[in-house]
Length: 269
Ligand SMILES: Nc1ncnc2c1ncn2[C@@H]1O[C@H](COP(=O)(O)OP(=O)(O)OP(=O)(O)O)[C@@H](O)[C@H]1O
Ligand SMILES: [Mg+2]
Image (cartoon, rainbow, N blue to C red; front, side, top):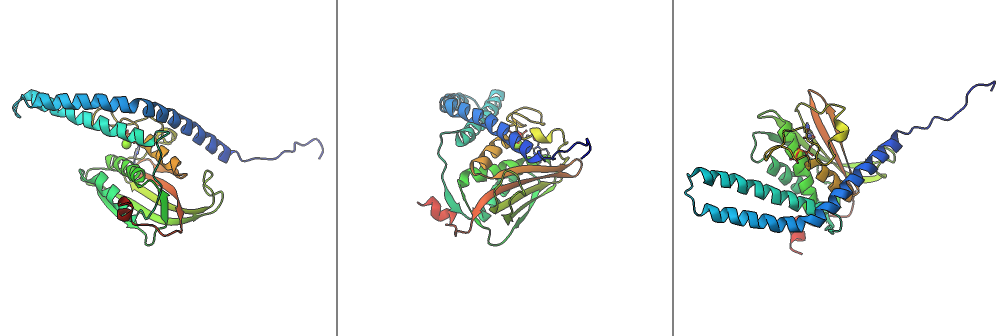
């Protein structure tokens, strides 16, 4: 050419995407290490706290004001114990069960469990003959329940959410961080307020919460735990949201054509 500029345009969207994922993975690794280290001591301390609360309660009439306060303290201690349990579950060095399972029933259970003490209802669209997933069913169940709980918390009173699971034969490049192959795709949709675009990149960060902090409200650990669980299964999770309309979380888990063993049978081995 005559003095013109020549060059090649390289699309770095995918690379940026992968870098963002790497940063996320590192953040989660540090949480995992921390959790693995302190969780057991923490659990012992919680045992002492809960034990003493229960003991103190035996000295009080049930209509006594301190009795109610202790009940609240006890409830919070149980929540803390659950949280520690979940952190231990995703911490590094804890080995993961690997079973080939059909998740159909488990997805139903997890969703209904997460909605059980709410007014929100659920449309379940569980396609037939879902491919099996090689996974730790307890962890996957936890992950789905967390996302459904968020959807529920975002929904208006008496609202409806959708949970859909289907097979997906993914081609290379469709989702940058995933290889081509068979996946189980699980989508959880709510019709809540949605997530503003500037917050969307932060929702998987540990301790990011748009909710008021408190015993009942967010710790900001739910999605960080979900993210870790999905990554440990070599899957992928992302959120799509339109402010004012709602949010969809898509979870992709590597699937297999190998027939699944029943979860109940697996529990007996
Ligand atoms: N379905 C949703 N609709 C709108 N916002 C959401 C949705 N899911 C997550 N978010 C936003 O992402 C934040 C992080 O979610 P995450 O589950 O990690 O924490 P949390 O729900 O606030 O607390 P925790 O799960 O620890 O009780 C939420 O506080 C909320 O602001
Ligand atoms: Mg949450």
